[in-house]
Image (cartoon, rainbow, N blue to C red; front, side, top):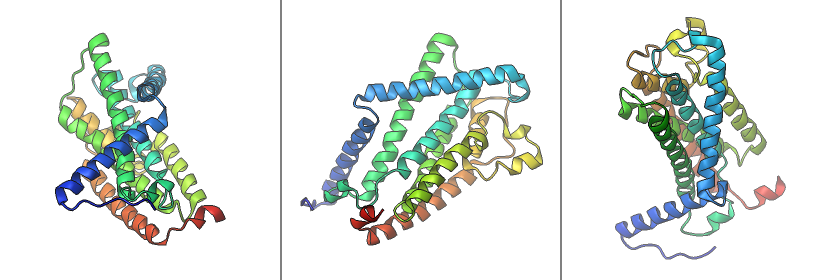
Length: 273
């Protein structure tokens, strides 16, 4: 293992940790593409394509799906942004290497820094994408009117947090059951295409249909976000507090699994698999 002299003061250790996280975030973003600008452009194109597809679908279906008075494009963006940020956080955090990753042989690095850097890299890319799209739409197409931008942005951050929490649990499971963890990651991301509720409102669902969606924290966050975005929509069947507690519980479970795995990790794991 490469040797690294530890800091003698708490402040020095804090600066070293922040520097490590910064360089790890840059490295994580550049793994998506050699040019960070191109990586962000790819993210913007993905969002625009998804919004365009959903816009065409809802144009054919009429207003029966989205019974909310307001801009239809803003309605779609409020769902697509949270959906993509959540599933990207799940994918990226779940794909973080285990304790036998070669990067872990460098003593300044540790698993917590790697996880935080991966999560922040995903958040940074999506935040830039979101602000660029909203600015272009506001300046070139139609002025945006968001009723409560602060709480709406908080819902975006919570969707990222819950996605990181789910990814952390899957990451802890991966060294023990790599194939199962990969399948669960794919299944969860595919389920979110249906159960995230990005195309309809919770208030418009009946009791039986609502039971199929209320398990999903992302469903609660998207519905609550639309309550903060639109003046005339009041979500009655969802709660952002539920998503917070689910995220906290999954983070605790994931961290327990990660640190337990770290005690038993071995370089021979990848060899026998």
